Image 1 (tube, rainbow, N blue to C red):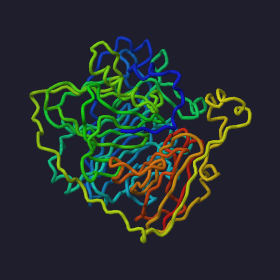
Image 2: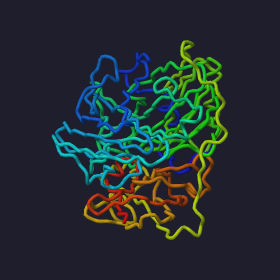
Image 3: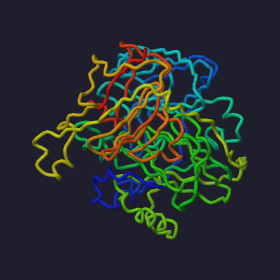
Image 4: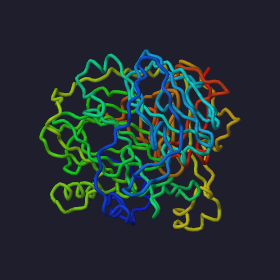
Length: 502
């Protein structure tokens, strides 16, 4: 496993922050709660599913009620289950005192039901999209995409998971019992004040976006999940505003990645560490047959010096060899012998993925993600590191997002190659309405773990990331698709463009 070499922002802090599961005195006596499992809404029959967008309260910290937002609940939303070749009917009711747009991230749908910022639901109004599900099995999600408010609303809880099934995935003996051996794992990071309230400010965020101090999983701090003594499927979603995470286990155990954003990989990929960027999804299989607890670590990528692989290896050895070492545990899996186990071997072949021929690729587009510091913040490197978003102009190809401007026009059903690069740091680049096949990541050939269907690719200022893509649905000028950085503060500050497909 190798990591990017461009996000070396605050390494002077060393491993201090990464080694603490949380940083506030409020959490000093924290006891691990059970892993919250979001309710499952079954949309496979086509019956309408109602999702109330509302404010609420959530107990992240015992004894404190934190003001939050959610769908049908205080924080986050239920998991929506749907199926290929079915109709998903959703009924969003906005009970907030502000407008909300809700994007179906990863769905292959027309722009009219994609949920981009042009489809904002006013206060007290409803939006009832009918969505034809035509794509293979995948883990997707839904979240706020309100213009200039995606970061704030998602941070406060407007996000939830979406699972697509199909016949091919059903035929495989993969863990599939929701909440038992098939677990939704939404990873985020939050900062709390002394009253236990969420701290967030778009304009006080550093130039890498808003970084929370405390990892939360499904809204819980360091939760415990009781699982069978067999194979367990974790559907990992990086739902953070800006954090890149390094996921590993304290005992350095091997796990297998079986799927990325858009569905199953060709075959399982064995890993001991894995980077996951904002907006990405990764399905992994953890084998619990030995009966030992598995402690999942979620390291902050910006706190680990990725130029020194020995540092990460040394940390993992320390965790494995020492009972007293402070472990940044974000989730503990503990075997419950009373639960029936899936002990079937992993399939050697998961999905057939056919790439287009070079002769089929009819056009190449380039996208340069830009962050331009104002003059008063360019005097020293120290000032540049501390610059806020208020002192930056963000854009793509030299322009910031303008709701009235169509930046690109794409032809339906035509293969294209998109090349993406930044002028400063590392960014997760997301495209609406499609999945794509990655060719290079930051100038290097895509490794096997990135060679499945994706809708987020990481890029930096060292080399181009390239992927091939084809759009099979239309998006008009009234409801165009978006392409943008999935660091939500960058998106809200203008690092986004829009395009039609006709």
